[in-house]
Length: 266
Image 1: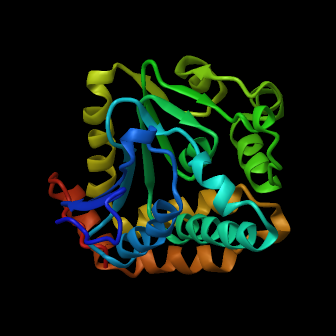
Image 2: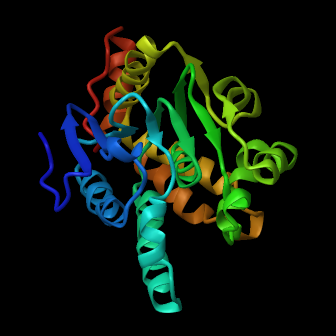
């Protein structure tokens, strides 16, 4: 099932328990345009609100890029004065908020360039799998851009301060092997194995108990926060909901009967 969107530069469809979101601007190596950014909340909110979608995968179309960064050709028009910059930033903030509001596991399937805003997009994912030959970097220092704390913090949280310094200060491109070594991605696979590997991960997640998976994801998010900022009451409520669910009963029965459980997310 494919979602109807206002732009053809994004594609969204549902296959079984998996929602697929594609950045579809291959002529510009999937550079993020304003209309693409505006479509992200529409897609992710639909996936969030559909109980049949248990995991989401995002990828770029074509073989050149996941997302090569922001569409710099729009900067002159979209970021040339305080008013346009404020509007541009608001659209980006809405997209970022939609990732945070998804509440379900998100996988980034990366092939080719994953640069600048594309790397920050990939960092929204819970799991990142990249094809050999992919390249990563944040070239802000080469463009003279003001680079916000949010992006820097997310990068440091993922790879640590030492690797973040090398990535940000040089503004260079780094191979997938470096990205894997730094913990920027979970694994590197041959190009022909990229989609099958991602599908195996997505299918494994989709087969598990949704309430438990979403609880675990939320717990991991809270664990990355400072202790005084953690919402442990919500986590405890999610724990209680798991124990009170029909899926908990099904899980126990399936274990005793030595069969695969059929979870319904309730």
